[in-house]
Length: 232
Image (tube, rainbow, N blue to C red; front, side, top):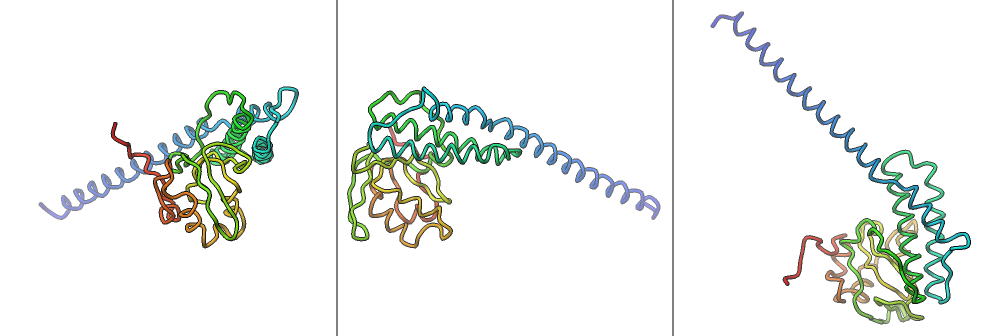
């Protein structure tokens, strides 16, 4: 095989490689565009925001008869304000999802307010992001921490009026349940989670039914393994 033939063969090989690379790049772009379109359609925050507003404002608004229900409605109003603030700027799938999560969280608090007052909670709601790894408090526990008593429970009471629907907070799982204080709110400060958050989790929550992970798992962001299933 002479030099001209080798040159042609090499040229054809390079051209084929370039064509394959360009084709794969085009496929990735199409896949990314389709994924973005899918995500944009998946997050439809408007109806959730309207539903939340309807349950908090107007003649059909949910009212509170107990301290626990009042605390839940206050949290629902905070979620409504956050969703309403973000909604006009929700021009990307990520922002639309943030608005939807805020509105759905607010609806979870409204539902919890109904439960606290012994009313019909209504239809189930979609879980918040990370709820499958957060678990849920399955028994009442009261412990001493920092010179005060703190409690967690699966049900509302005068001792545990603060509800949490279960989700991830700054990368860490917080179980659904009723608490004596909003201990997870420390993560919303500029400093983030305090250094003793894992030890607090171990003391209050580790080992409770529905919370099959400890403070180290909490700190690492592991939580419940949603793939694990108990044998029946």
